Length: 409
Ligand code: CTP
Image (tube, rainbow, N blue to C red; front, side, top):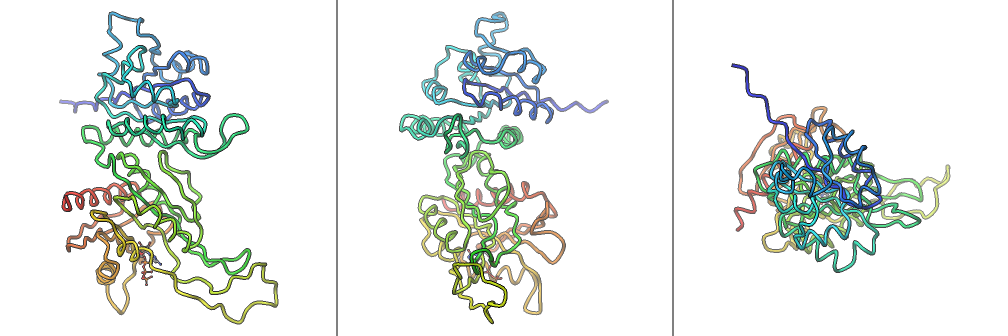
């Protein structure tokens, strides 16, 4: 007998009336490319920005616009029931307010009331509207109800404005929806948790243009931030010198030096449930920094270095009750001990709950697409994972953190 074909997941794409509606087209295209069956429900206002024919052609399905169309199929109930995921892109401030009220006077509102599938909301609006207490209260209510409301990105807005309110990149929104589909049947297990992730590598200036740095790409930290957001967390990503697209739905704080990273992590830590130190932090920085560019022939005979504070250890020392703290360690074996012996010592010295150990004796690690890691827990347990994508490592780390919550509650 032929094996049963896997069911094609259905994604409903709601589009509301904002200028970013044209970017929904790219999300639809990407979801189709990933193999999903896509049905688009634009609001009437969305159709003033993008025509029905575009949505129909890109999705390959008739566009559902009206609660009164095809009444015999009861679309206001059937579409929501048939969905494996719903994404609203872009979501306006007005849409958020209406959704909080549970309005069902258009097809998108009715669909949101009938669906039991994960709902991802990608917001886009002007900064003042996003920051208004009414919008913030609406976002809070929707998140409490289990919807994944992505933070808008920071950047150029319509007209001369720029600031927070820009729609996250379509590729990033699509990734959150695909994650939600992968986790179908499971709950967004980090819903309501606040997660702070550091990523990248710090730079310690020598003069106006030179610095001591490292080659961390930031990919693992970014994958962790993206995955935590996809699992429902409120994520702050403290990023040191990374040139990667910002994952959808995370709050980005950009830093450069170890001292700035230290400061940003301590600020964010005060309200965090989980802290993940994936950044490669310089252990030393030059004691003197020349304000100008040092000229040829004026090079100092030696650069005096002073030791930076151990951020992870300081975070552990000032931790809130119940906070889970995770460190990373790239290790090689040497005459002093094996990779695991070094890692066990580091876990004990730092005092964190979990240490994600990366054996960098081989080719993997900084800059590579895959990682081979072992997750050590303070209670002595270890889990080893063979060469996995950084997204899969992120998932495994979050699973291990989830286990820590269960232990501490
Ligand atoms: N770390 C930190 N602050 C520092 C140095 C490291 O918070 N000043 C964190 C890293 O982000 C990582 C963990 O500590 O999560 C381990 O980093 P690593 O560089 O391996 O540790 P070190 O304490 O610097 O040990 P080593 O002597 O092996 O470099």
